[in-house]
Image (cartoon, each protein chain N blue to C red):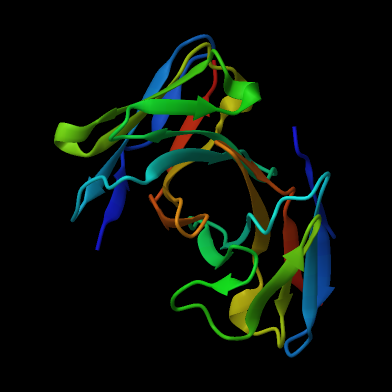
Length: 107
Length: 119
């Protein structure tokens, strides 16, 4: 099975900071990666699909990139509404695997 | 705009079973899949399995194979997730979500159902 490793598990940042979260697959996955944001008490929200396609209504400060085994989610300028947990999701055939998650906290 | 509406909170004893529902409101099932995801306290999101309602075919994560069954009723646009032999570690919020093959993402989520397993 393809494994997904997400890091860091948590980070502290300030408003205005640039934040990067990484997911690394155990083998090449052809950009079959999406990214989600989850706030306490809420359902997750799709941010990015197919590695770099920004979902409708998502602010332009969110971007995704990557290929092969290495994928990143970048928040160009962290806003107060962005303090949340973030997850990558890998598609492989009929199976899906979430990364372990990254908690973005206020420094 | 399709919404996914989930059934209410459940409290169960260890060893029992639970059946959760997820109804597509404001639309019907397309050719996309509906998946189930859970988040246990202090843990991350965990994909459990998916079903393509128009085909009735389901796939499961290895860790849930044999204990989880996902079914769909096209006439009511409702998907069900049944889990047997519940244990305390199954205490979690369970979500259904639409799994869109054309974008490779889960674009619509239910509001979540809390399942508490305790003696």
